[in-house]
Amino acid sequence: MGTTGTATGLGLTWSLRGRGPEDVPVLADAGPPGGLPAEPATGRGVRVCVVDSGVERDHPQVGPLAGSWVVVKDGDTGEITVEPTTTGDTCGHGTACAGIIRRTAPDCEIHSVRVLGERFSGTGDVLMAGLRWAVEQRFDVVNLSLSTTRTRFAQELHSLADSAYFARTVIVASAHNTPVESFPWRFASVISVGSHQEDDPGLHLYNPDPPVEFFGPGQNVSVPWLGGRTIRTTGNSFATPYVAGLCARILSAHPKVTVFQLKNALYLSAANVHQGPRPSTAAGDTRDDSEN
Image (cartoon, rainbow, N blue to C red; front, side, top):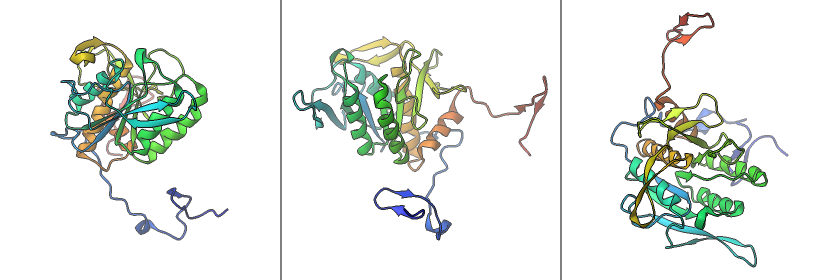
């Protein structure tokens, strides 16, 4: 097997022997200074997919959906397909997430892929199929306020998350609400989200001690629910779409940024990240390296 060249159709480049910078030009976007784009940045032109329990159609706090699909598993053959649907939401969870995204990025396109049934029921293979389909459609942002504790899906989920990362589809994934091992939020190729309890609904934080990278507003938040209603609820599930909406806003103003640039933008705009003198190792001393 050769050590140079590109695998046909796969986009895998093993080295740049025989080629130089002029052979691999990149039209870049520096991204927003300080992490958040200047107003107005409303998500216009950005396609966001909510992989969840479906979304109630025409909920006043969600508005029209750009597309709606459901993952179907044949009870006899086990075959899994993704099909268009008009069935809406089975339990309210997806509608809540879509409403938070709409509130944060009002002009984005919202698409829905239903992988959960009534009472939040679902299986790992159906979740995998729905997420894989969303990545294959090359949505800009995928909101996944779900995870699985089944380790047998971990390797496949990891590979899928990496594929999305390199294809510039950002997966914004909710951390489990309890301290258990679950996936895919544990993977560095996704943007993982937990919740904070600050009063400011427009504030997010960076976690200096990952694997959860960011905290969004997820405590006692007002969300749309079934039947055109609004409820208050708590959970990492509802912090996640806030961060997904922020990603949509950034992408609407800076469509060429990569997933790692998005992470950096979220880092720079986090309320607890401050740029200033770096403390030295000596107690009570500080050192400013800004001109070094």
